[in-house]
Image (tube, rainbow, N blue to C red):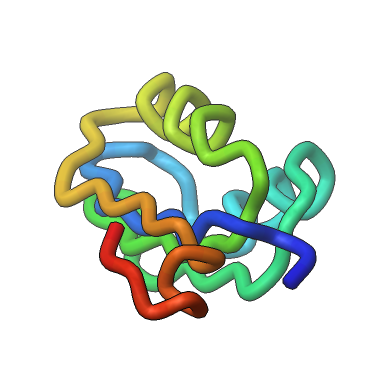
Length: 82
């Protein structure tokens, strides 16, 4: 697997639409399986990356982030939790 961390969060009052967020992610972060759903008030973000802290830092700069989940998919593949 190329990207180790499954990174998920909710972004509230980020002020960006799905297309703008998608474009920024694809230009500035390495990863795959990007999914952004929502609107400028509330956005659900899902992204596989090796640098989840960069995603969290960027999103926290846009608005309030919550329900943050970062899971190590290598551990999951080995049957371990977390």
